[in-house]
Length: 229
Image (cartoon, rainbow, N blue to C red; front, side, top):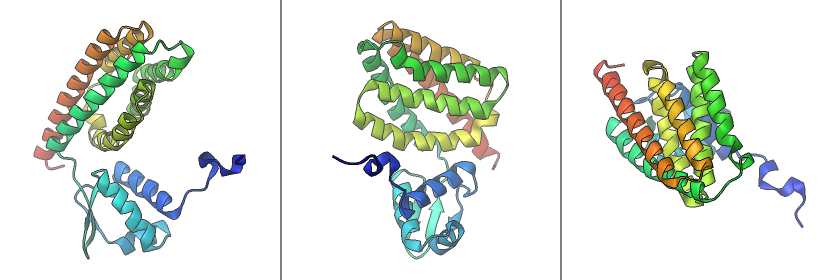
């Protein structure tokens, strides 16, 4: 039997994993700006690691559509494209609506649905305090919890990859959007439908919610690009 110290949750991160998380955070924070170019040696020095972990991390980030590896030229941080974002939202909508239907059909108890309830509560508090950063964090928790409750591990893997790109676009547009009061109401309606075992309503409400979010995101991104920001 493996000891507790051997479980994946307690294993230390490798240099490649640390570089991946650090570079991803820098991309989301805008420290590595869309369209900017960076040498692997520059990034390695900045992170205090060798070039090999940086290259391995860059390959993972490239697979997520966050950067492009260019031979002998380092990496380029990819811009947030409205066309790409439209495709990503379409995929996420189908994955999350599948999860909402599955979750409603599983007959979860109220304690099982606590992650959704807590995320909604935190979103509502954040809106009341006009705290969009905490709202975005709670909103992300809601969507992740929803996909996990759907019980499809492959859908969850694709969601994680796609959702990282949505998070980056939201970082750019977060303070340009209206206060997300309706978004919170949508989340609560999805939660109530899942709790009631109403798969049709859970799907319909979440699909409309994601379509509205997509339309708003694309409009903001297009304005953002037109202003040259």
